[in-house]
Image 1: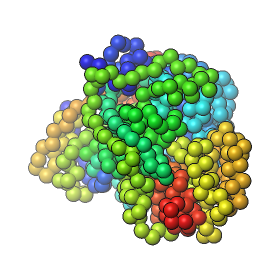
Image 2: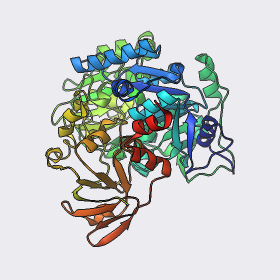
Image 3: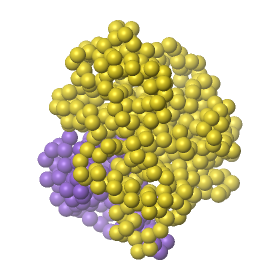
Image 4: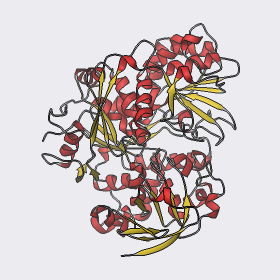
Amino acid sequence: MGMTIGEKIIARAAGVSSVKPGEIHTIDVDYLMSNDGTTHLTIDMFYNQLKNPRIADKDKLVFIIDHNIPAENPKTAAAHKKMREFAKKYDIAFYEGKGVCHQIMLEDFVEPGQFIMGADSHTCSYGAVGAFGTGIGCTDFLYAMVTGKSWVLVPETIRFNLTGKLREGVYPRDLILTIIGDIGANGCNYKIMEFAGEGAHGLSVNDRFVLCNLAVEAGAKTGIVEPDEKVVEFMKEHGRSYEHLYASDADASFLQVYDYDLSKIEPVVAEPHFVDNVKPLSEVGEVKIDEAFLGSCNNGRIDELRVAAAILKGRKVHPDVRFLITPASNSVYLQALEEGLVDIFLEAGAMMMNPNCSVCWGSCQGVIGEGEVLISTGTRNFKGRAGHKDSKVYLASAATVAASAVAGKIVGVERL
Amino acid sequence: MEQFKGKVWLLGDDIDTDIIIPTEYLALPSVEDMKKYAFSPLREELAGQIEKGDIIVAGKNFGCGSSREQAPEIIKQLGVRCVIAKSFARIFFRNAINNGLLLIENKELSDDVAEGDVITVTIGEKIHAGGKDYPITPLPENLMDILNAGGLVKAMQARNGV
């Protein structure tokens, strides 16, 4: 019996020739990433609960401050200080204020075929370059940091066969929200979502990242696309290795196969308060907004900034709307500056924010108040996710967010 | 097999980690400080009503969302003996086991019980509620080892000598 990409990566990490769904394996982790959401908790456990604290391999660790940067109160400043000092003491790769953790991992670390654990649920993004990334909590992180190992239950794989091309004005963001709307918020619970077919290979690394990043919103352990020449090109550009390019075997076993014709996908919106609460943009009705947000690990890269800039050029943000734009990393920000996109955003009346998790997780600047409505390219629209518990978050593509920011209500660009 | 009784708090589907503990309270210094805000976006009074030994019964996809480990820690700190749900989100599932919080998957119970019911759990065997038995599928051995050790850190201390 053949194996899927995900199974092959687990087998390699476990040092065995093959694995089957349902087996539990001990694996070597290639990278361990932790951000300021919980690293201080890991460090507390390291110092206070272990008799002989040690680090298995400091070169596998990456610490990134992105959730509350710059610190907004003495408590987060203290958590950051703890993280900074620990990284220095143990000579751990450390990033602060450079961008959202998953974007940094994509730009500087992830290679195809690696098994990566991150103390953040959206670690599932790394399948964009054919790696197995998965989110864990801080205790799992501690265990892997100390032992260099972790355990995995080999998940079953669900394949999404993509054919055709997205139409003009429809984005990968619309595709993945449509899929989640169809299968539900636990439609792939503990499964691997494998995106395959010519439709998947027609997408750029950026667009694959958009798909894989939201896999966790369907409950998946990871999302992955078979790495191809686009991934090899990306690795060459970034000066990294691409020796482990895995593909699913022809006789690999999939729990389920879904077929999606990309040309039939239309712009969609996830309404409050669940990511699977998806409906076509055309059926949303009259929804006034108070704030719009373009950014996050899902949708804050140069591709999305270009889409928004093309819409905002020569237009103004609606006077009743705050439009916050947060590039996913400094390199994205620099690229946007170079292309003149930031000029367009500022002239339109948008606010440029420093690269961080921003409005998406409701703790950086830009939180919304009681009864307010946000349209966002963030990852989640849970109740209270972006601020007050009685506020509302709608999720949509960069194009819909930019058009809505101009209109003051949720609309597609064709209605401007 | 170990057996315990507990009073049921009944919750719905998709209880996410932002409901269990909203982002704005994560900066508080300890789980002890955070726990009074547990479930506040959904039921503001719930955290104050839960008593030691109570049982949370919920629908599908309990714990979906973020990897924030404060979520299962808070539920444990509130004194909840176990969470029984139709299904659990996977990161929450790992985090709960790693913190020694017992989770039981059962597809029917949440449709059959009412809030305030007292139910009996025999670990690894069955749930007894309203005159009916609901079998429990035991967890894999290595997860039971973590749970029995009182969480992953304690299991690691025993296993790896750190």
